[in-house]
Image (cartoon, rainbow, N blue to C red; front, side, top):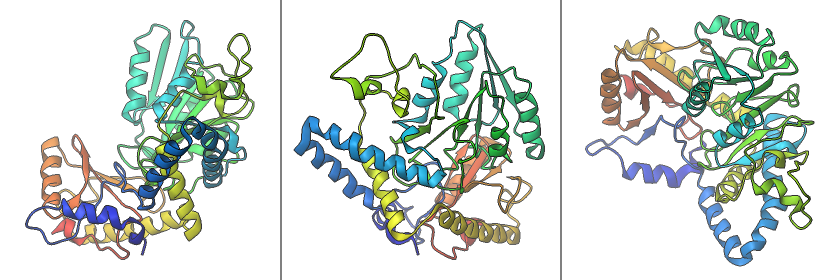
Length: 392
């Protein structure tokens, strides 16, 4: 039903299909690289024309029209009350590191996180840990049943200036149980970041109760299907942090009457960076506008994917596959405790690679992380997909 929005991408993928296989491509790496909706192609052309026709004046259109429209759409999707508090950047790492730069690293900095964070955050925290002043505590994600209790117990000790946790873990696909409720109870002096990348436009998310308590980061590369290069971070109203890592966009409102010293505004520009390519903004807006016109909501997408996930599980249980089975599946609550992908332990990296190749020969595309094989589900999968070819 929804494949019509992805025809160009699906046709291009089919041309790269495995030789000797007549089956259409079944792209199940959408949690890694999501196909772009076809409207993004016209969006790129629109950006090119605006740059050609407006030159430097394109900034007026981008900052007065395009960015506010994007912020409003994001705010609607996440139930955020203040769209002007949504900061933009090419990637979430830039935004999170700008937040970290608000702390004086000559003073003790204690950070609470989990052992299931994505590489960009995990690597950055490891590097920071090399400083004598930085201490990082990592709470094991498993067992998932007690994760929220164990994480909050540490959080409430009051020892931490910063807490960082994923809404859906990139390595398992499991949603952090009760994370938003936990965040609402955090100590006031602790800044908290929720990495929503694997939940944004996948799991319905209402941030209205914690909008002024947490920073929420995500982007358009995954489930929005608009490509890389457009990420955001919501900023609590009343935030007074002064990032050391700050760019000239942060002075956008005062370029003609620049004051002495370094000032910060009270909206998203407090965490603004510098010159970037805004074609990803145009692409993201095109997809958001398409969904709005067609009445496609996050709830619609999530329900569609969950139905396909249940069909996948039924096919898997019937097949008794040596690797793709419940014993190897990492899960918490298979009805509503997951993002839009499943992860299987394959015992070794060699087993995972072999299985990935076998699936590729059936025109099933997936990805792996060492011994973990990930299979994702998307709006562009056919309705009533049986997934039976994975198990034969």
